[in-house]
Image 1 (cartoon, rainbow, N blue to C red):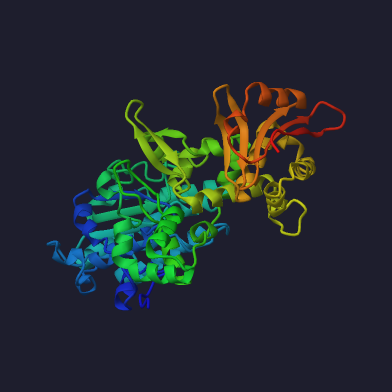
Image 2 (image 1 turned 90 degrees about the vertical axis):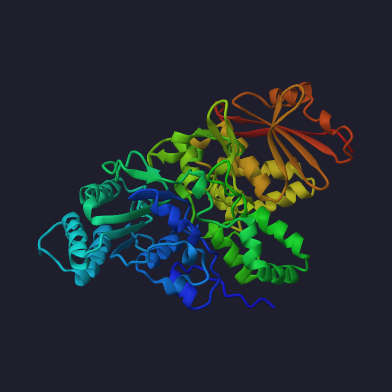
Length: 520
């Protein structure tokens, strides 16, 4: 029987230790972090353990050695002399409120001023921050530790509100901009975020900021390797396996496919998402917990607006510079998808000094495709809609391509005028097919060319070719002349060839199609 206590959503190190929750020991990173410099930055996706890491550092700098009994840090020869700690956590606040950021900063400053004293009544937020750093040093005689958690959440939350975004950007730059000038009072500063935005430049004056986000030594500082998973959670995995009526290895394989796969350097471990693992073991059910806890709508909109074919997201390449520092308003969404956790490092290409990115796992890939389809076609998620993708799935599963194409043609007519182009039809059809639970290959290479889309069910195969303002006959001729279906000559399943063309220039705008079944 599984007796483990899982710290789902818990980010306070002391509470986890004192109340007997499972803690995956990451304290061996404390000693090397102290040698990395005075100011350190780490980027990792949300709900990946950054807040717990900062809470662990806070307990160490407060000298609470009793909490570390039995952990790596207890025997690492560390200096346990307490330091004053100023901790700013931007996780919980609603930054869409006009003065949300100012109110949060003010509340933190009031808390620290009550402890260390207040020098003046009428100072700005940034001046008060400088004052409290100096006051903490003077009162304790010890240099100050500054911990800043999710510094860019006040910007990510309001990406669509330009005026408020720019206001929050100015406030953050002013508030943290003078850290360098206070370095004589600072022992250590650790800053975390989802991304380090080059154009935001909140810490542009902090030229001694050491970014460890893509450093091999710290690749596993957040997230769990499979060894850590089995070392700490084997009883929970066994219980989950019993619930699923599977053996241990089968359940571990399912967890691996659904939650594993994050890599932050090409030499690092494949890492599991801690939040999803804890939820799965607590609920005894494998579901998309991380993705359901927050949706990347603005990223999905960028993919759609840039007409990036969804399968092409997997396998895109980026330079190290692009991965480390991106602009929130950059048109290129792929580096931001890496920093926010929707893509991860697949491999490194030394010849071009670039990284090939991929979806880390099934949870993220399926979840992002769902979000993308909702951006294209919101009605597909209404179970009572005639355009529910469950109905599209039934059409494909039951060998009803005529019904599938009729449904698709009607659905496309409901789309906004600006959305009508070939890339939309290909994207929508691909997304509907994939999310219907049917394997699909986009731009499948054959010996004479590439088909637009091929979809496979247990009983049927579908080969699609899409055209825009051309002709159905041209689409069908391409399928036949390039023998896209030839590779299935020995497959016993019937194959449907589907050529489609969306007429824009004709008076009756709409999707035309032709279907041919080539095997009985």
